[in-house]
Image (cartoon, rainbow, N blue to C red; front, top):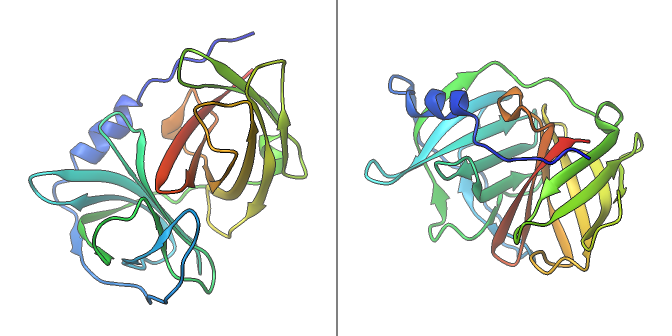
Length: 223
């Protein structure tokens, strides 16, 4: 069994930290009233289809993130300096943006937006295989991705993950629902996105999941 060791991709951090000449972008999406167990409605700038490195927050406390936009759905992840997700924003087709945790403001504006080469389309079929992720307390969980998008527990471990992947029409991303069993550091049910990016190597993908104002960032490595 291979033992995964998560490390922040240095190239990605340098790229984000060095984005000093991009265009400024401030705006808002359409906000609708509503509630969700995992997220809060919020306004976020609707960027055109593509992939972007963004800087949010303030000049004194910037937040670096990745923005993935499809034709009618979008995903925004804001990270800390170790590329661990702190906030997840998702807009599914025909629905308002949802944020976890609540950003404390009705609108998220960007200090800077810099286009990147678009991510490649991804499918569960391409990801089919066995993976490991490191949890808290020096424990691991195995995950099997099947070609039909179903997720099942892989290996014998105390923490079992199951669920389903589905398309959200955003390159490099899939919608994910995950259920857990005997995982003391995770809720029993989570929703979020699977993200694939060459900057994540040696990880194959990460699951950025949310529940009850908390974000959980799981990086998965081939086994």
